[in-house]
Image (cartoon, rainbow, N blue to C red; front, side, top):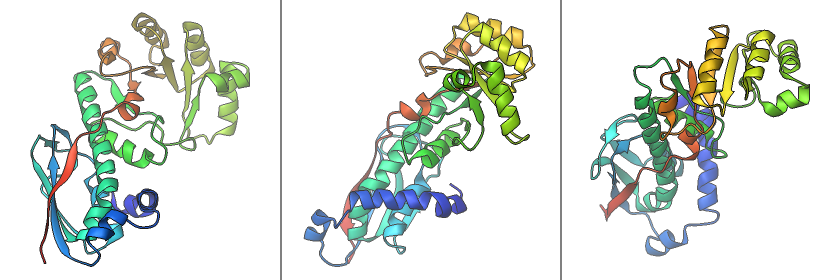
Length: 284
């Protein structure tokens, strides 16, 4: 993760996570380690996967004590295996114990997303279709989860509601129709913004093309419906398919020639990658 992003964006969320876990004091740690003692602990991988989040993991301990040393033997994006030594941490034992759960929560979650994304991205190799995430992220985890998607080989859709125009079914309903929604967006949004429209039928596809949408999202359509829609659009807009796209069914769209596929499952359904801090010992 970019150091500037870490300082400006990620730090505030990491601090909140630490405050959530240590609201007053770490009673267990303070009971067994009332005073400073230097210690060492190892970060061990417990299953195969793709690693993501090491800078965030290390930052947790740095925010607790800047003198904590994290010596890493791998980097984000690396394929890791069960039993592999990933890093060694040295510092105040109290810091190593108190930061453990928060640091592991980030690393396990982000590595799980990178691993799942990598699996799905491999299924799209050799096609023109690019894999995107969505805004279906864990609250206050978006910066970390979308970073993990990139590490795993996917790409980011818009980051938040300020990042782009996506007219979904309820926007269209509120505006009175596809044409009206697109026209309103064209009049309001800066001219540099593309207009994406979510459609659920071939009739809505025609309306979106006629209205001049830049990107047409084919939502929850069958493969046959998407194929017909793409033929009708015929390059007049970029195409994206969405709606329950998971590793179990994403291969149903690989031959369609769609430009993008967006999958909320990358962030909301990825299992964690099991990693653990083990073999704690004191050095002084």
